[in-house]
Length: 70
Image 1: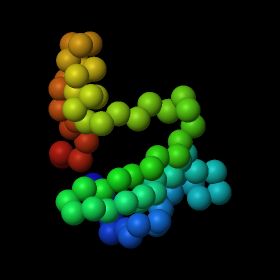
Image 2: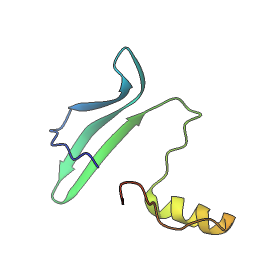
Image 3: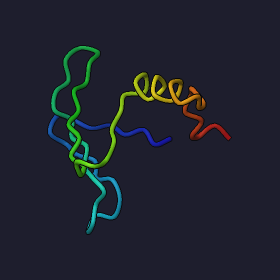
Image 4: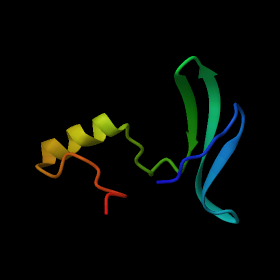
């Protein structure tokens, strides 16, 4: 897992900088809440983890994301 510190207005580019898959921008920080903007192609699915887990359960698949747990 990669953890980054970003300020409002700063961005993270996902993928090759010359041909990025998408971009994430910090839009607002208020108290303990961070608002993010995702700029990806429309056909790229983006889900909150709880929604992704619901979809997995509905399909009968694993419920927790196991990435990074070696």
